[in-house]
Image (cartoon, rainbow, N blue to C red):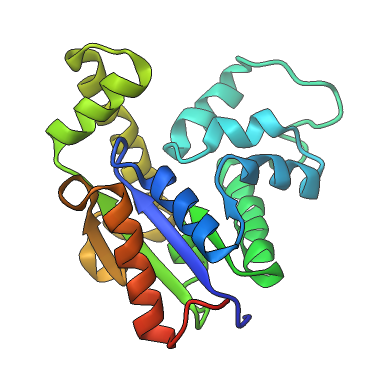
Length: 211
């Protein structure tokens, strides 16, 4: 355990959770980690990055099926069966990476069960960012030039994968408010006010925004 401030953010797809985390981290002067985590786990373990990307916030069985069917190539340095390279093992390596980041410095971590992995950290703040479906569809349409139907399909698919991933490894409902210190509707507040609300919570809880 450390005395670092850790903000672990789970988010519905399209709620702006990554943008909120990025703005919060900038205001606090601390790093944010999201898609860098698989790369760090790869460097830590020597296992190819694409293996971690295959299981990144996705249900566990799809990767095991891909391994069994040998549907992607290997570079010859790692045999997934010889090294018991399962999705569980990859999750554990990534969890160790998340813990290393928490030990290193104060930071914001997006997804990847960080809320659960770091549950014993004294200065961990677990946050769930949600937003009404119509707001999320509007955001995804704008960001990726998708139709409303395409955006809604993408949202449902990614949320389902994140929910299954969290449920499998944390053994809890991804959306359960009791798992979090704060559950915020960013669609109602907007990005900037959600960031301000998080900063206010940190100040009220710890007496200062200094980290």
